[in-house]
Image 1 (cartoon, one colour):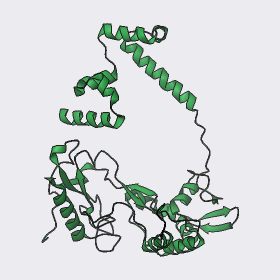
Image 2 (cartoon, helix red, strand yellow):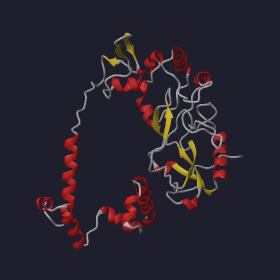
Image 3 (tube, rainbow, N blue to C red):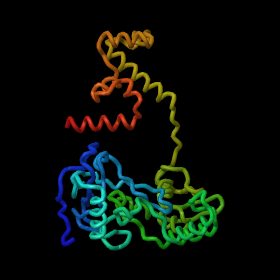
Image 4 (cartoon, rainbow, N blue to C red):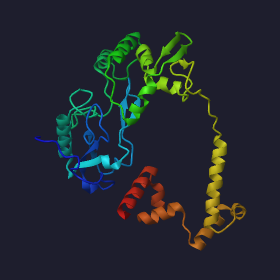
Length: 329
């Protein structure tokens, strides 16, 4: 490709719940300049299809030593989400995605400004990928074994190689929230482990290097959001952790009272009068007054019989509601 596409190429947002529109290629743009690129430059290139909406849902990218950490990379400002090309076949979308990722380059490969974790196209593997030293361990462990593919983290050899890999790894790029929390990660704290003793004046980042456990766990403990992580407790946290007791019974009763109040008002009754009626009496009264339930209204709006609507899964109903709302707007 001879020149970079303009940040304003394409317009609008990804199509939602319209299968006829096929596939599209989109980009997330930086809201402000950072060490990887200027404001307005793309930081993620992706391929989508009808039924996905990048501005109204989370786009989680795996991070961390085991790929168990997640961060939402969708920009908070919808103007930073653009469509580069839409209404195309899947093969064309794959090809364009791979070309753009190759053109802009990836942060993890130190070739460019994109946070993508693969090369895109049909040859890409989505999400977190094991580092090479762990892939080598997995290959050795899986020889002649077709019953599992997980790394045995209790193996001393795995622990040793993993700790070495963590110490030598390149830290993933941070979001805007990550930059704001960076100084917090560098604050020294005192730590104690029942078996490993104390470590004095160690920040969360250094605790990750020393123990091989991800820094986010230590950050949660130091900020009072967790009591301990892998047996480590913080002796001088910024905020002390307190266990929250949740009265689930009281929450359920409160929700039932709100629901009853709403149903009684729809029938023009007081709560006591509503509770005095049995289920069949309430149904007859609704039918007499021509009042339909929320489920009945949804079924009517979708043009589906109530019996068939009840057979749909909650996700299928959600998709249909979203499609109808999109058509109305």
